[in-house]
Length: 247
Image 1 (cartoon, rainbow, N blue to C red):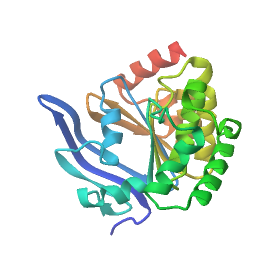
Image 2 (cartoon, one colour):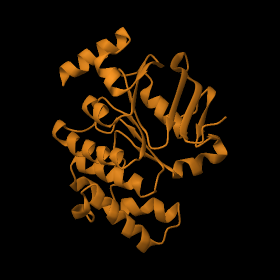
Image 3 (cartoon, rainbow, N blue to C red):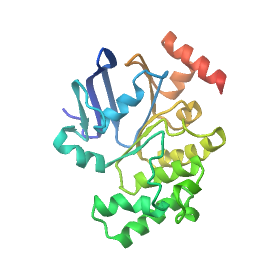
């Protein structure tokens, strides 16, 4: 019997780029309201995995189910409209103000009236503590501020799921906390989330489950407590010793 509470299900996903096997037999499930952190060394397939979930990458075999429906090309637009994605780079339109960046997609994609779109945009800017910067342009903001605006922009589409692909990796160290604080608030509010990150403090605090990837495979899956105190594989133990030592 199908678990209708499953937000995301990946079954036997395979992805290759030429001779490079990026994802190997990947399976994962994420229930509504749960937070999953994906970690692992560079090149382990983390970003490819998260991009397959909303159709930014095609996969060679297997299937992705979103709320019990198979991800297919004819459903991509609907799926993407219900799924927020935050990237390493902020991807804000430089010629638009912060407020205009936030209202663009609701007005043009969801046909929301401008006044309503602006009202919601201001509410989201309040949420990420950026309302005072609504009429600035991206170039006038720090990296951390731009990333908070990018999160607010994703929230303006009223997503049921939020995907984060290493959202702090392009930031200076002092700007990372302000972005993680926003993500933590989202997690606490009950948002369904998948986050690819090296921020182990955030993972320990926010995640319901952690999966560890290496060479395109999910080689370990555990609660944060289990993963940080008793990692099962030598590869995860090495990764943690290196990344926690750096921290």
